Length: 405
Image 1 (tube, helix red, strand yellow):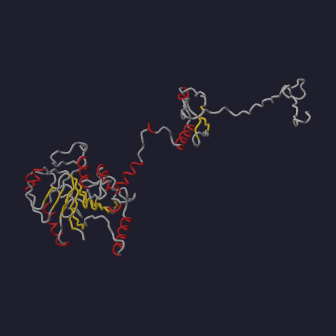
Image 2 (image 1 turned 90 degrees about the horizontal axis):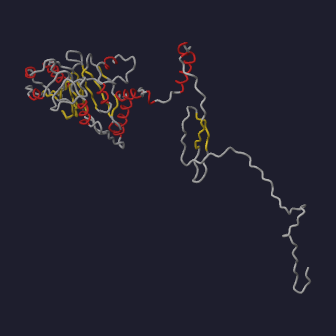
Image 3 (image 1 turned 180 degrees about the horizontal axis):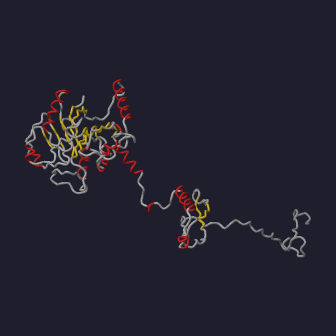
């Protein structure tokens, strides 16, 4: 069983109507652990009188601000019971749930430093997003939040919606790009944001990896007075998936968990970031050659387009025939001491030095048939008029007592 909570959109000062609706909802669904409010909580007028006029809440109420600002002094002097401001950004345990929060909206001062005393401001800064990521454990496999509260919607939430989806315009309205980039890394089970118009919800999507994969659900709630501005949810604290596959119940639970993850959509913020990276074109200086198709198309267009007379007159002189260069490249590598096979190619383009391997042997000269050397003949060859004195006939010596030949 999960923990029952209530979530409200921008209240804008209608605290009495909110607490009355919360009491009515609690009587129908049973005990509620907490009431969370996103968006403008006080409205345009935020002073000590407005804070003191805040009535007591029947349910522990936790809120973040939107365009309204609550400083630390006013937050500490809240006279109403069961009402608490969570802060600028961070993550803490509330009613048995891990709750992350980010107040304010995106402004032109996003890159400025956040207030050192932690006081509220209508715009969040980059430092606030980093604080939320670190506190929620976004950079750990086992990190994450059960509930995330923001007053801003994030860019990229509509990445997995169809082209004809009616929710696309509402989802993209006022979306924050820095928050969308952060949500590609943040992991949560429920994300509640303040909607600028009517409320909307998205299908569950996957976040996390391995045994810490979970389903995330995004709901944007409208301001107080519109339909579905106060909704009830049953949130189960996230725990890593550990199933005993040796038992029937464990195997069934593992199969159901895997089926839910497969049925869910991909993380829309990660999909949006991947599409954005794929569509990025590098500066022209980084591309030294055109694709073959683009080069052929450009050449075809240049041939079909008639050149004006002025352009022809001012045209550059025809290029000179520059000598072709020959370069040898090794095509194979053998054992030490063996010769390398080389392949000779013609290098087109302007004349420039060709650098080869320092130990490459010199190229052999083109093959020519070996010259036949005339056979060396002796001057004492047969038929010559000279006698060879070294060719003397030796006497055969017989036995000592025999005749000599």
